Image (cartoon, rainbow, N blue to C red; front, side):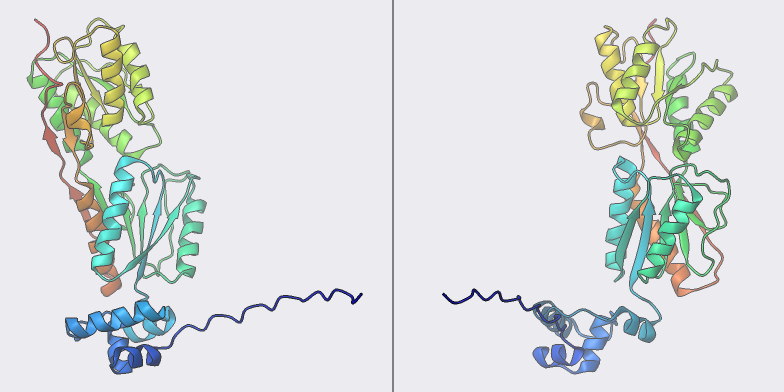
Length: 346
């Protein structure tokens, strides 16, 4: 019986990516035209551009980022570093950044981080720089372990939802004015004071809203009760609400986001306290579900799409004009009054 022969499977040769010349031949255009399309130049008519892009897709053409950078001075990509990627505001901001970048002809490389340290942020930046990005947006949101932030000086940077004391370009909501509008709304309805369910103390947004809530009450000569700290979740708002229903003089509650306001509403309902007849409840963010709460929630609307687009605009300004002074933009929030707030009981 013949010995069984074991054959070693041959490894596949590495895939050969099509060249620019092959794309040109397939599309029936010149290599220069393919280069202009690959580098997103505007001196190509749309019919030809569509033909070249179709050939690139069919052949699996991959532009050489390094070669493109030599021609255009740009890699055609931006990086984004963010904490809390699942949070409503951050998710909306990241989506808007991706849309605005794509419209500008840039791709997006994303890095999510957990550790609230400057070292973790710097490591994420180094990783993205190795991926050849032209600039980076940092959605800071969390307070880091150091008051200063030292990032590579050669990289254009925009900080969103973070410490506005940085030397970098920044985009943020006018948190104080949004908070002032909702607290004054409750005071103008006749409430003697407004209790507060804050977000976590390591959040820039939570800190700013809590500080503005207290300042607004002090300016109005209203009593200031200690804030109850939550963690942005409906559960933490529910636990805070269970505490608030035990305090006889509570007639108005401002929660630092809509999810916590939802938890407060649940606690009030379980305790037999009517909203808004017994207690008014307001939130912040204006999530899509806020108008479907029972009752519909008075809240502060934040346009996260505008924040994301501003981030890309400021980053592209720095990419195009290296060394320009960083700009700072504040997006104005809007008070949205619904059925969850009313004058206090007589």
